[in-house]
Length: 302
Image 1 (cartoon, one colour):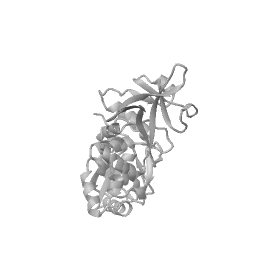
Image 2: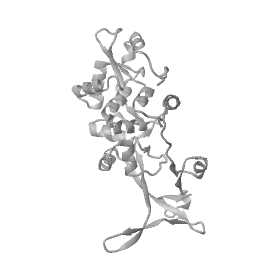
Image 3: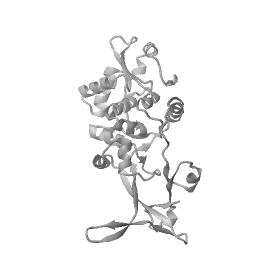
């Protein structure tokens, strides 16, 4: 499998170019999370290692991708609430996968942590595409439960962005997080949920709710058809950075035979017309002015 030389450097090059100023660790204000990497790490049970990779990138104030091991340990303990033993154990666990630890020639007696680039990590986690990163405050990224909850929350769109409905089962399939645990993480990360309803047009072109018959113990009744919820996180949008360039390289280097999933939800009629992969039951988001109940998320069958 071909590697992209622009994203990787050999260990010999790294050793010959280490300088004291390049390896500085500082106090971070924000941690940048990438949704697809977070979901893949949760599913592969590598969330602890990926959280540490995010944190190493955050404390690498010079952006060179290298940190003196002792300085990195001290910064992780002071900024993210690790014990020194836990931080060192996780650094050893991720060595050779998300970063590399080696002895520096320019700094005798010191070990250096070389943080792997975005392309290498995406390839390691078998991720074929990356969307726009999100940022959260470093002060919120403390504690094992909070870290995992924010990795889970990064899978959703930031508040204010347009998002599509998704079921709990689909979230579980994408992240490996069980339904009960999803609800716990929703509370920790402050996830906002909005209900979605399915509609159709009658003979006069008016929107009418799609209803289905519900069987109870002693009676039956009609109920409006619900779709999956829409979820939004409290994270902030971050700059795209290298994601566009990395996506192009991933598409060239990764060979995949997986069939593309059919799209079911469309935010506009224009996106529906342009999409060649449409589900038989495609739904379009109803304009705010046309909704039966103002403020409710309603989707009409195309």
